[in-house]
Length: 480
Ligand code: UD1
Ligand code: CA
Image 1: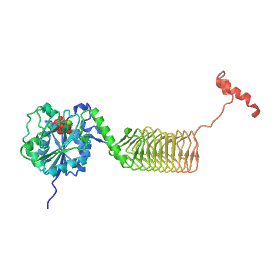
Image 2: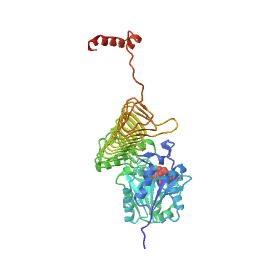
Image 3: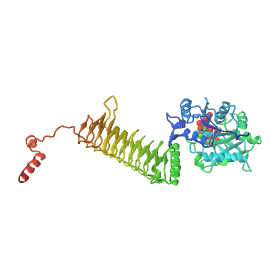
Image 4: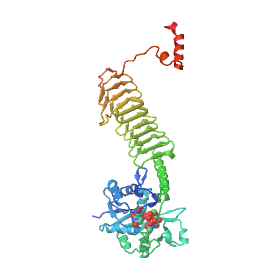
């Protein structure tokens, strides 16, 4: 039985990326929900790779740990000294002597590359029966990138590094993206012939093309349809440009899928987040991590969702939310803070200036104003008055509070956990509740009010208050 030739992805990720000037390695810099390297690793399964090899070097432990986490099936290979891209691939192939078939080489710092583009490269490679195929791109400013040298027939002759190029070659605007497909056996053989006789004293992977071409093996070029996909990034200014390009690409895809983005230029959606048609995102909002927004939900303006699921028809306005579930037609905000474990039932409400943590609100339950709800279960249709504090922490441990269905908690109450307010129970405003309140009972816990007659006239004579009080006393006697 014949099998399709195996497809291996080799990701080059050993370089240092000094110009990022960051304690975080360049490969692990974040970009819309993944690291740079994370985006590149995601291409491998998308093109059906049988195997992924990642060449690590600079900060190998940190990057190796990241690879083990996000691509556990990948094989890390250590390139202790970074002697060039050819050296990196040679070390990868030396470490995998059984590797045959097709090898796709990707750069760990080229995160915008789509699987579709690699598929197009593979198709060109296969159609041409090529030994090696390079993804090129036409750019306005080729700068320090390698140049594609074509012969009179238009075929690839070789790739020249900018530092080794003549002035005339430097004027060529077709550049080498650093993305390639090779026949494994021919690549292995050609890598054995690389020299370091060049401007940088490195083993250039690009020289493989000249070597194979001069041996009469067919080599091919696929010109990228979208040159920006081949952009790498060396410093934070370049990273910021990639971020904008990716944001626009992600936003465009969601808009074409039926999502209403009112201001795409200020809307940031991680590649790991999902939205349904007719979801609405207003300006200055971020939909991050594993967040999801269902149809008819309105997010923002000025809202950040992190790992938060918003159900259909819900509204989340000027809110920061992490690890929360917002139920159907629930409303949140403005100016509220949802923390992990918050679960809001259907048509429930979290109003303005409310913080909720590990708090479950039943259907139609309301926490409309200025409240902290920590470690609580609030029954359906219960109402929590303005300024209520769920005092969940005794200084050592956290405790739970339960508020029953349709209970009513008066404003400015403190519910001192652990405590239970029964179904349909009331708590008088201003109470500090330490004892359970049974179903249908009124819990009152505050000092009796007493009014001391004439106190202002005696203790605050000559003040505006005393004057107002005396005026009131003169005007009102007939009414008493
Ligand atoms: C390389 C190409 C150049 C191309 C450019 C595209 C060579 C000789 N030149 O440039 O033609 O236009 O990419 O970006 O290949 N890496 C290692 N080990 C090393 C050296 C590099 O793993 O020893 C990794 C880097 O981490 C990076 C990738 O290989 O992910 C490319 O390296 P980089 O130094 O950016 O590319 P250049 O060699 O400058
Ligand atoms: Ca580069």
